[in-house]
Image (cartoon, rainbow, N blue to C red; front, side, top):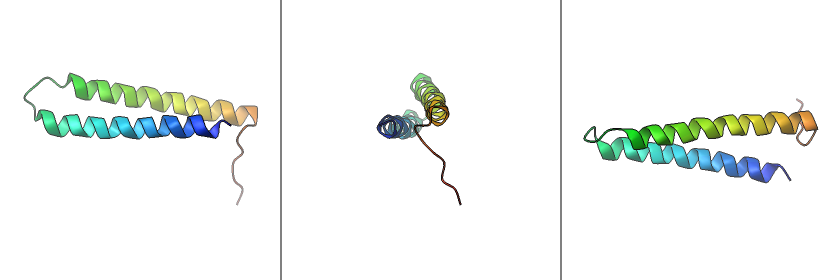
Amino acid sequence: MIKLPIIIVFLVIVGSLVQGMYYLAKDNGDRDKSRLVRALTVRISLSFVLFFMLMVSYWAGWIQPHTI
């Protein structure tokens, strides 16, 4: 149940990473880097959201760690 939103947030983080790499290569320093900074901000914000979702899911017992 909670695994699907976690996977979706992770994929959006990866998409933001790809978008930031595209802006870094395309802009070539000609423009100001606001698009690159925005992509970085989105990626960092979503990483915090993902971390929070994982912690809440663990504390609620929705996900369990694997034992070795």
